[in-house]
Image 1 (tube, rainbow, N blue to C red):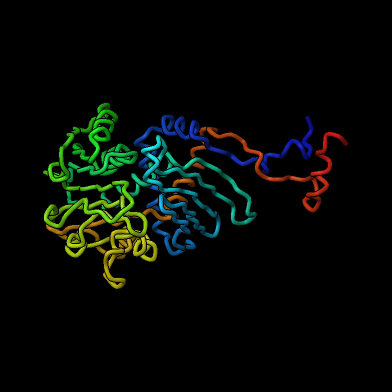
Image 2: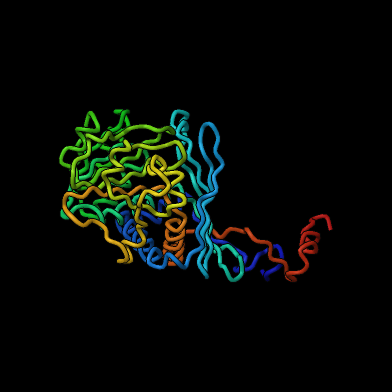
Length: 354
């Protein structure tokens, strides 16, 4: 059949990665290879941090959650992610976080990839955590305490194993069913998994402490006296105004590393501190422009809220893998008239009654 206005040309078809495609892609590439690949893409993009347009995410808050847009661009590609955070959703049988994202060509403005990002956000969050821990955790770290055993916990555990080489994970959640779920899902891995009855118990012998709880409130998941010298804290649960997990005393004893200060000061753990409190941007550590861990007794804290460049990197990596595997659906998303000036004519010629 010859191409007509009702059979769009290849340039008008946008690859769409559905949830099913994303799951197939992860299994085709391999979970650990996927995590390492996304971490590598983030690392490469953070090395050219200054080439990106950067802005804090645009958030619409409600009493029960938040909906956000996260945009960024370099001189070749533009990306955004739509993402929500609704902690109450779990009680209704829904995901706390859902997302989708788009990658576009800056030269034409045309989208080149549309993708689910609920799974992809879990992967990139875990990949980012492990990438940073590789640079900040104490040498030879083998054990992570995973406090908060919801949807992110297994991804964090696998990423720390794949990228940092941990061998043990100690689990705690205020909901024992969440811990049982996480332990069951990790049973097929080579990790030694221990279910714990308290956060204090989970941290016994852990060099890396990850906090990832869902309650939208200023909580004290870790009190000051729970944190000893020499650990790395990966704080990923505090990600909006009014939602924190750490006692302020921990922040004052830690060297704090962040993604993008204008966003983290509003949403992260450091919203509890003054606006001039010293933090280090993690891209500077990756680029060798600022020190990371400097001694064995230092407490390092990655106050992570997620930033748009990480999503850009993840989408860029997925685009490459889609081109290699073909795991996407061609989506008729763009109007493609024979004459680009005649959009109305295309509409009229599509009338089946004419």
